[in-house]
Length: 200
Image 1 (cartoon, rainbow, N blue to C red):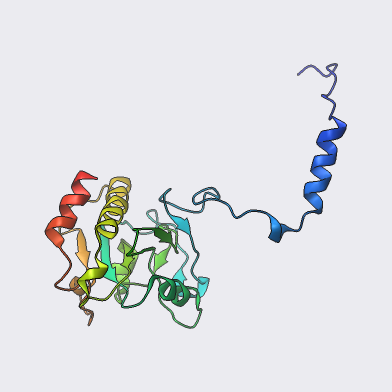
Image 2: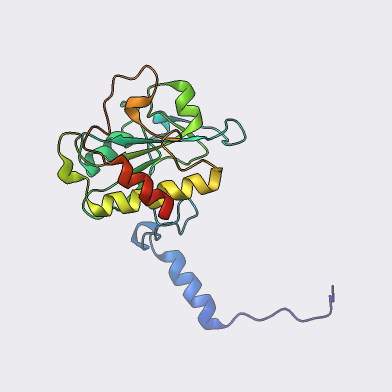
């Protein structure tokens, strides 16, 4: 290292800009774009963190192998689902929520952590849970955008963890042992969904 080299000089303008930025309240700065903070595992997602009281901190896949994606239907609106996940008294979360109208994806729990979505500890530890806005008996919520964006998300998860893109590894909540849930219900088009996942 050449110690005799002169340090670059900071211009007065640069110093003033830095001082002005430091004086701006943090709350007035623009929100980071989805994925900009590095908080999301799936870059198109928006980071909308759940309460830390509603999931288990972990270091997956080192602590537990991830070999399943579990498909859910919220039985709630998108906004209410996010609010439930942020309420520390609810004791429930999923990793992702997909909005019906446009397929927008929110990530609420890091994939390395264990979301409480399956109602079965073993399945929670080994899976990524995706909630879809809507009701099992209202198929109009299962829009083209919801199917397409969810399938891209599931394909990305499968690719990252080496999960086969089939019905043995992409399952409905109703298939979790011991569950009393019926989602995603009879109106969920599994043939279409698995096809979309495989072509994503």
